[in-house]
Length: 384
Image 1 (cartoon, one colour):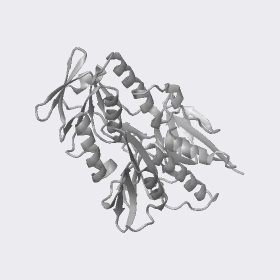
Image 2 (cartoon, one colour; image 1 turned 90 degrees about the horizontal axis):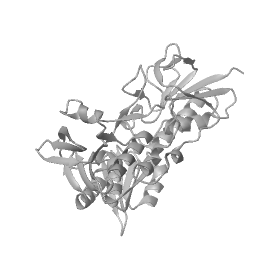
Image 3 (spheres, helix red, strand yellow; image 1 turned 180 degrees about the vertical axis):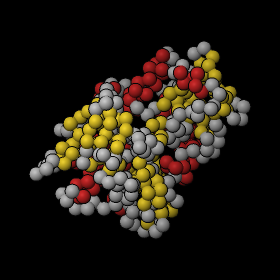
Image 4 (tube, one colour; image 1 turned 60 degrees about the vertical axis):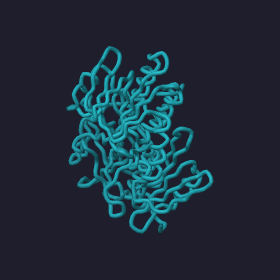
């Protein structure tokens, strides 16, 4: 039997899930390629490092029995079926799964003062384990309650604001939208979270940062309405963009079966992907559980095209995610950026159903984990 070489780029949620699904398959050699010096870790756990007491080593992610190479990918040549690495090594493949994840969005370089502040280490993100360690060290260096500005109000920003406020820090939460978090939570849940923010921290919704300056150990932030804020630490949580090697760079476009467009035997999964299908249109989700589900699905797709198993069908987002924000459990499953349908208000639970066309594609809720999780398997199959 000829050995089929499956190469996976990335050792995060999608990459490791794909590797687990391929491990043990007769006649398939699996190689996982990560960044130089990278030890695989769970990005879902880094918040415990950033504002908790978790040891960074506890975030490490076990890999199945595969060939593991920590050597950053410089570029892929899909025509020659080659992966070119930073060390100048070249790896050939029969099938390729691109699962290189995402980069955090940062403050635009044309904002006055942004580059000097970035070089001084005053502007931070919370996307990687390295970021989490930096945030924790910066907070501890303040020696007590700190003035912390957070730019963004989605899932990561909201969890961070909640956790740091609970620890006694003075939080300024800045968001470009007057009602932030709609794309993440849906409008109704986002409105309730926004009200919680406004009751507990200082909010500047509908505002942007127009200038950044340094004053000793402090950072001065100017907003577009002339407001000035002084912070000991500034955290940016403005979402993510795909982190893909050449020839893609801005993300890998895939069809509904996670096959890369215009390239044979190339698949992609996770935060690096831009989905295009007739069901949801063009969409992208970047959270751990959905990335893992995509990774498992893309491996099954590869095996199907090798004649090893049944067709797994088109990928549909059903994975759930959860966050604790000001003592309330915020949960979602599937695609929650779609239009809202039914609202289910219980004594303590609040659930919103999200539709697209004639099917339910997502559900979100507050203090309704059980209800949200029960909806997951039925998404994309149930009429509103």
